Each structure stands twice: as C-alpha cells, then as structure tokens.
Image 1 (cartoon, rainbow, N blue to C red):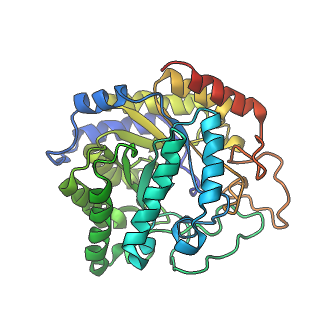
Image 2 (cartoon, rainbow, N blue to C red):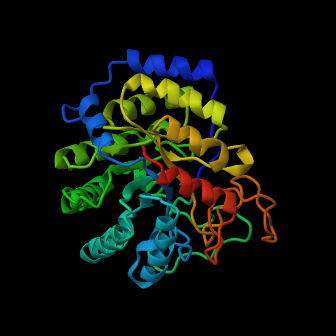
Length: 361
C-alpha cells in the first residue's frame, strides 16, 4: 500500500543495522526480552495471512463505519482465508471511527473478532498510518478511481493532524481505550502501532506521535506484544528505525523485494535475536511472489503477511506507480489472492499457501 520502497543494498543495510546497535536508544523497561518474545512466538503456529479489508470497502473508514460495516462480506472472505490455511490477518483501524462513536466502534471490533475466531483466525490491528490521502473524513467515502492503486485509502490521523500536538490528548484516549478493552483478549495476536511512520515525505516529523503511541501502549501493557514495522532503509530514516527496533517486542518489517534481497534483510534482522514478522510483502511485478518467497519465509520461520486479499474497491491489483486510466485488467496483478467472485487469481498460489500452512511449523 506504499510509495515505492527504496531497494535494499546489502552494504547499506549492514551499515544501518550496525549504527542501530551502536546508538544509545533507551528502550522502556517494559519492552519484552528476547526470551519472552521467543517464548510467545513458539506458542504460535507458523503465522500466515494478509493485510485485510473487505472488497466492499475502499478504506479503513468504509470498513468500520456503522453504515458500511459489512459483516456478510467479512464472513464470506474469512471463509476463503480459512480454506487456504491462513490463521491471522493484519487489519487497520481508524481514529475517526472511534471519535464518531467509541462504544459502537468497539462493538464492531468485537464482532469482527467473533467472525475471525469462528474461522480460526487471530488478527492483529494497526492504529496509525502515514500512507496515502491526507485528510480523512467521516461519512460517505470516495468512489474508487479507475485503474489507480488504493485511491481512497486514508492516513490516520491525517496531515497536518499527525503533527499537531493539540490532537494528542484525544488520540491518547482512543489508543488507551482500545488497548484496555482488548488487552487480555486471546483472539488478538498483537498490536501494530504505526504503519510506515515517516511515509508521504514526513520522515522524522512523525517521531513525536510515534514516540507518544509507544508510551501510551506501554502504560496499558497489554498481554499481546506491540511493534511498528521497519519499511525504509534510507539514511534519513535511521532515527525512526532505531526507535522502532529498540521499542518493539517483536521485530516487524515490510519487504517488496525479490527473495534474494528479502533473505538478506531477514539475515540482518536476526541480529536482534527476536521473532521476525513480515507484515507486508508480495508484489508480483517486483518479483515478490508467493511462489518464490513464501517457502523461504516458512524455512526461516518468519510470519508472512502479504498485501491484499479479495479484489475490490482498493484496486490494489494495480501497481503503485502504473495506473491504467481506463481501468482495464492489468497483465499481471500486483496484489490480491482472490477474484471478486471468490475464485483464486492463480490456483497455483492458493494450492501452495494451503500446502505450506498444512505442514507443521
């Protein structure tokens, strides 16, 4: 769902990893030890899933608002996920849905968890997000734009809202309330506090809010681990990356590179001696596919969460930077696993997912 990822260069990544280790980032006392994180991870099956939004929703608000919360589609689509052995889903929340009606928003989260649990899926939730459209608004959401990837996705809390300190007290109430409500809920796998902090040209301007949400989460101390994924290895992201690594209970990251570069990323992140969670991968036209990457992730015991599930309003079968003005079918889908009618885009892929998830960890 992102802007183009800076290609990984082994030497550059090695230098960055080394600099993270040598920088005196002081992690809060409550950050999980490596032993605690490993014990938690050993209790899980090999975790496989997708970044999930129902095909009927163009963004997080359309997913969660009362008038468009689509239980029928969620149930039908999570049936598909269960059918190929997926056991988790990464799901984005939105602070405006909470602001509109906190009690009913939490009720809808509970409904979603009940459906997921019925399908033996333990999802995890994302709070903030620096990607795509800057000014989210409640109410009717925009229609999708023909042939454009994720045209209606909304940042949370938005821009300039993310850097306005006056907004922080309300955001703190939101984050703490959600965490306290579900802190002991065994149906939830973990908490992903911030998607791609610093994206959309923000870089270190995101640090105050990123720091704040980790502080808020630590004050609640949920049973589930907390994390925020690395996604950009450029030097301007060193401060953000150091902070995320030092303060995450488990190490999560995004990688849309081919399997060789992806494996190098894994080998370098193993330096931190904690479980590794790939919370975004799989972009077919970038040589990041289920066929060439998923077996490697299983071999390395890395959680595998691809972007996209059922073709729908988000239009993420189209590439980030290659719109098709007339909305024609792309020659090769960028993301997504299933067509709108629930049939696999490539049966070879769903067969592989089912095979690998059915084997022991």
